[in-house]
Image 1 (cartoon, rainbow over the protein chains, first blue to last red):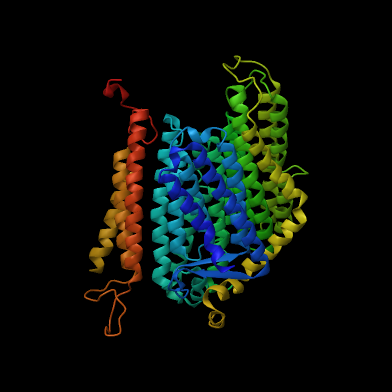
Image 2: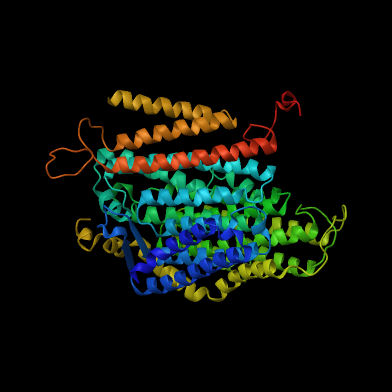
Length: 505
Length: 115
């Protein structure tokens, strides 16, 4: 299986280069290459996920340099699952974009592939500095995608987004080098060995570095108080780009999960789970801010964007407890929230094209209102966490996992209250948009049959949440095993450094 | 050397943060550049400050300085350079489109531009 591990990085890199080197002259060819590459990534991700269930963890040494010195990619259950999630989402988003969005600016497909390369790389890398490099790859592609289609509003939001993330990158480097200065290594498995051995006098520097890194991951994951960039960015982006960005917040969540269970996990001495006490209150506040923001949203895109903030809060609440059950529950909610957020962004654009605007205000009736309104209702049910869709199961799992926590009262109250708030927000938006008639008749609202491809892609993404709840048993079985692997990362360390490294731990 | 290095990083960071808070796109970009210089110097310092020792591992050398921060700085410089170029292009485009160099696009001096 060994060489397959690097394919999720190499495939999009080659495809993107080909697209830049002149294939973009011929649109049909360009689309074929993009689609082939994305489909191939999906196939590879499926193969890697199957492989990850059979072997505990597998390391891929680039250039065959031994682990703490060379660059290493690691495949385990978590990274395989994230690859699968990314490629499945990317496939749907690409199908949607083929409906016309890819023609509204230049190099959409090349940027899309570079974005996938960065995301896949971030999930696979076993080295903190390479995590930084892949972050930059995915960010620079996202800068291009964010302003795709252009327009003043988008450029304004893009400026904020770029400057926030460039500042975040500076902080990332400071945090990484602080940790390097104390431990002398940047390999995550090696860090897991070295962190417990750090002298008491250096603990301050080490923990400051670890928490600074939480700040950086928090920017990506839209954690309060670092969430300000997200609603504006997502609301201003084109629909397929916003849908693809649903995976970007999850890169932040993944990094938190990986870094603080591996390098600062159960055996890290004084720095054990250093992120937990900071992460929990921040996640709870994020949840409240997101759901209250949904109530205040005047446009459907802002409604969904704040919904993303709220769902990040919910899933990070799960992660912040750092128990196997809570991690498993958080990961289930992560799968759910990625698909539902992407699906809603796509659906909202479908609605606003037909309706002429996406304002949460009374408007005219429009063609295809029956289908879009039922989809909206299903998506709202899933996002708010009503049964029977996956949002309900995800929240239930998180509530169940919080039972033994000291903060159970807070967690239960806030999750239940914010779920109620998001139901109110969706009910208000749905009734204003679909039921109430008034205002001006939408000018030039298309009345013909809806374009098939975007609609199929939208339904496809939303159907993933139904699948997720239908196959909740096998999925949570996989996730329970993943959480167990995360809480006891001996397989991971042994795969990267060899079994001897564990003895010195 | 330690004092010079530490105060240099401190001054550059302070200047960078100040310029970032100016909320005008050109100062913001200069501020980001200052910040990335400070970060580069910081990375360098975290490999411990040494003089007259080469960053090469060789059998004949009794003493050498840590080569890894130098490799990291090189990567960080390249990335920061590329990102700055990208930010300049984006900000220029935003300026032409929105007709304001305020990061929020508010043109509190729009009368002055004559449009």
